[in-house]
Image: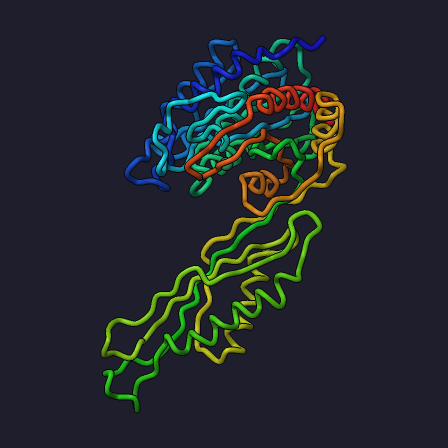
Length: 391
Ligand SMILES: [Zn+2]
């Protein structure tokens, strides 16, 4: 017997979460409030409804909320949303939720407090009936910057003892970034590179001694563009499209009358499922060699891509849950942007993304479709029940 989720209180919850600012302080130093207030509200809200919820410090003053339902004797399904948002930008009243028709406006409404609300509502619904196994909600901090919340959560879960000798195969995760009701099975990764091109410093009058690092970098910069257009854009994945790279920043030289000793070119590469930062590093080194520049290439940061087997238990459970709730199969999709989903997958937990509809992530007009939030909550409940049976 499925009790209907109370959509009115779910909508109130979305508004309550938007009303509590949780701007990531690393993204917006002036307006950054952090996640402490919204996390306290969310864990209190869950506890008042009889759900075991606690705060977990992702960084000083920057908590995750971790909540759990079920008897723990069986598979584990993780439900993940991030609690932080980007800054308010030029929004007039960013934290005054406003409903127009079925759209709720406000900073974080779409990215992704509505999703956090859907998870919280689903937890209440799931707690109402006996469950074999566990559903663990991870409402995490810092996704918009360094994903500290997801990393701390996963480090703790890695030490979790699996009951009945079950291994990671019986785990799954649904990340709930807005997906417009599609089932997202893949996203791109990215890698950041610093390319330090060398020159020889000399007084501006000494063309006989000087060698401009900036000029030496020019051939490399052109090669990055050429490699992007002629090779990477033709390298494609059926769900996420093509790989790409671009020259993000260039910093070189020290003054008018000095031959530039050093020019640092920062290149961002978007990777496809199956590609690694190491491979991209090798390709960039080849471009450096071909350009004739003397340069050192460093991989500064890498975030892996996501790819989930369509027949994995979590993908099947989510697909069947959508069919049960909506009456039709979801569109299967891939997206270009990166999410915490890849960190769960990298921890050996098969992971999909499914979330509400709306618009305006990181933009000055942001809204979420409230009907899609209610649908997301119902899909999470149905997916969890299916996963715990089959996982
Ligand atoms: Zn997001």
